[in-house]
Image (tube, rainbow, N blue to C red; front, side, top):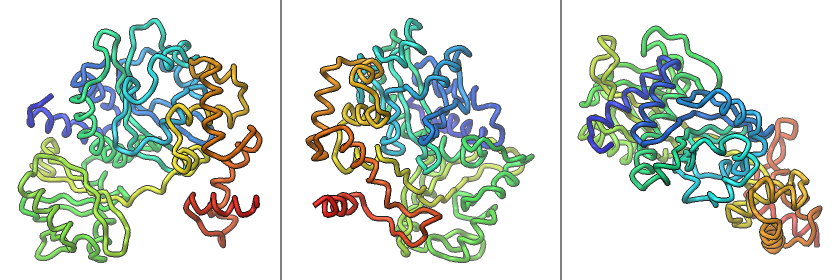
Amino acid sequence: MKADREFSQLVGRIYDCALDNSIWPSVLGEITEAMNGLMGDLTVVDPVNKTGYLAARHNWPDDVARLATENFHINPNAAFILTMPLMEPKCSSRDLDIAAFHRSRYWRLCFAGRGYYDYLVTAISRERSRFAGWGILGSERRGPFTDEDLELAALLSPHIRRSTEISGLLEHRRIAAGTLRSALDALAAPTFIIDPGGEIGFVNAAARMELERGVLFRQRRNRLFGATPDAAALLADLKANPQRGRDVLLAAPDGCGFHVTWAFVDQAGEVLGRQILVVLRELEPELQTPICAAARLYKLTVAETQVLAQVLECQGLSEVADLLGVARSTVKTHLDAIYRKTDTRRRSELVRRVLALTSSLRTPSEPGRQQLPTDRLHAAEKRRAD
């Protein structure tokens, strides 16, 4: 897909899903076709209980969907998924050992022998209680996904994220809305509808509060203006390119960060006409798990992260090898590397050290404790050990 018009139409279809979650399978089909894939999905993962479900899917056979859901807890790529950067498409053929993945128990149980090959996935949210992403599964015939596929996925991801936020699809709730206005008015994120010249056609309750604060945007004579140079530049870009949806990160003077997304709304009918949807959202609280903390602090590779995730489950080397689709000696090599990087000598010591990385996070029952960066946590732990 290269034509701007085709891309804009697909983005419009994605935002149509904000009004009606039931059309997600059809829109996932259009995205899958644009990438020459076989199956498409929107997936939600519970990182604590290690469960997942398909919130929406295209062309997934019922038995494959059931097997993938029931066996998600043995997905060898779960640890990698939880540490992926947000909004950066990844695929098995580039970022993982795809041959090992195809030998893993998870792949053998769910996908083997059906002509599937590469899986492209993009993380669109990562919070303390859930992870959400969307993906396309390709065939053996089409082979690995290309640079063009990854580029298209990166362009579509901000719009997929905003559409699911508006509709509440990934939280398993729906906004009962007869029009786009009523749906957006129920959205917690500040949302504006403006014309290319900046004239405001609609603001929801959260947006009105944002305008009163005047941190990023202000209203003068029913027009939207940027309160900071970056916000003003963004609105100028929007005016120059109203049909090119974008997602940018803006820093507010008070130090808070916001994602700002806009999309040209061309299919809202007489309710809105041809205008621009602008959505602001504060950055999500970062998911904090021992795996995420250890991977970042000790600079673990993808393979080492996968092994560590299984070790934390008290799996034996042979069991880990079968789950990951690699040789037992390979697992031992990665585990030895983890010992070196974490300055530990045995599994019990490793498990204690990794689990301690998130033990000092503030919890509701401990309001007085402060959240510390993981490097300070490690340094404090070393001082206690000494």
